[in-house]
Image (tube, rainbow, N blue to C red):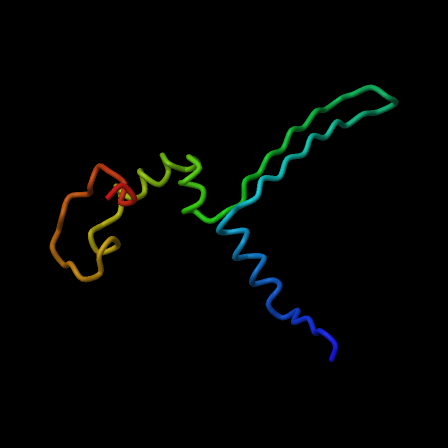
Length: 93
């Protein structure tokens, strides 16, 4: 009996690991003409799920601001009462 490999779930597993653990991509590019450097570009991208980003200290201000702006209906579909937005992020509860 030969081992088989199921390729149908590779993308799903990749996305799951990417969202859970994240990845950082970094690139430095120098554009030159006739061996004269003209433009320097430094690129850095962090890719992860929002929970992972917030755990690593990225997007904390964005998360806090958007949670404060959330209406009570967006925070809790079960509550119909009008409540003032909270000043602390929900993740700190």
